[in-house]
Image (cartoon, rainbow, N blue to C red; front, side, top):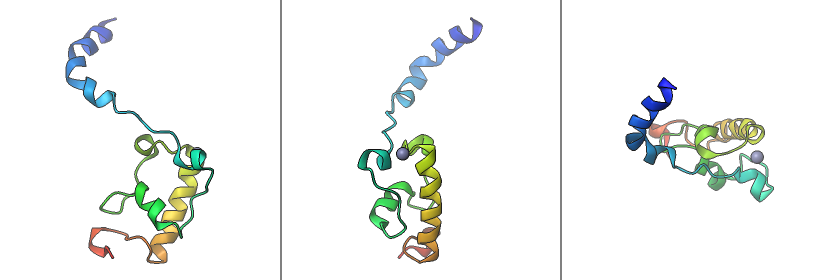
Length: 89
Ligand SMILES: [Zn+2]
């Protein structure tokens, strides 16, 4: 009860952040599997600095997120995707 009232007070400040819609899993929808050769697809799931975007933000399901992370790492090794900002192509 106490917690609910506290949240209500904070609500006005936090609301815009909560309303961000998390999209459906891209790979489930397109019925594709992540592949290290699809750099254009993989680039959607890494930040500008080369970090892999967490599933909570990208909406990818856990099964595809696991595949995605290994494919991103393969792509980095094959020099298709940068490891960090400084290694950008
Ligand atoms: Zn999926």
